[in-house]
Length: 111
Image (cartoon, rainbow, N blue to C red; front, side, top):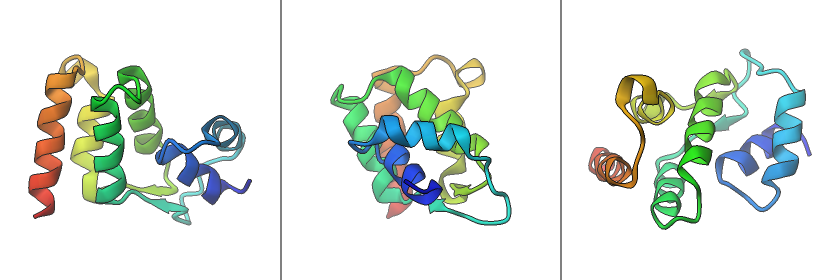
């Protein structure tokens, strides 16, 4: 699995997520090349899957931290949301109520 495929699997919480994590950890973030762009559709899907308890809140926070820290992931369109998800120290502890508010804001921003 190459880095681009690994990032896609990780970001979408795909079936090969564990293998993808191994690839991501072993490959440096390439700041000269974007390997993955976080789309609104993927962001909403992941957030809704978390709301339905398919994805754990702690896993979501780790997910956002990885996205925020990797130079080869373009999340500029959603950087405020990713920041809110990955910085519980500044934004307060993440819970389902806050997550539902974030989903509503993402959907609103899309329209």
